[in-house]
Image (cartoon, rainbow, N blue to C red; front, top):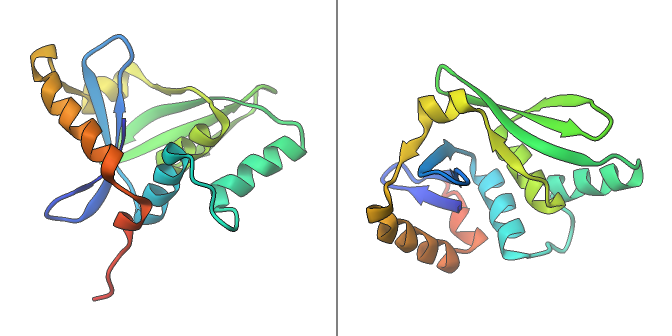
Length: 151
């Protein structure tokens, strides 16, 4: 679905939607990852590659294909993910980094049933107008909205 800033904490959150279901998975992320995800969603290319752009370029250079991103676990409030490569290799990753890379490579993102059962939020069809408002919000937000202020 996209990235937004949760108020009043000013904490970025990425919201994933279950395909063929009515559950949404909110994952709190850092401002840098929020910017990276927002850039990818908006098709923006920074003047210099961000870390996720670099990782994508390295994968292409060494001939590795990212075939899936899996959100695998939720322990003590921390989400875990895996990058799955065509070679069969799996690498542990933070979900925010994995999502940012998946958006750049066109790789599908999967959430385990256990994670969706534990942290998924069901939004019935009759509340779809609220989801549409969120989509409209995402269309208007820019990566600059995720900057942090010095305190």
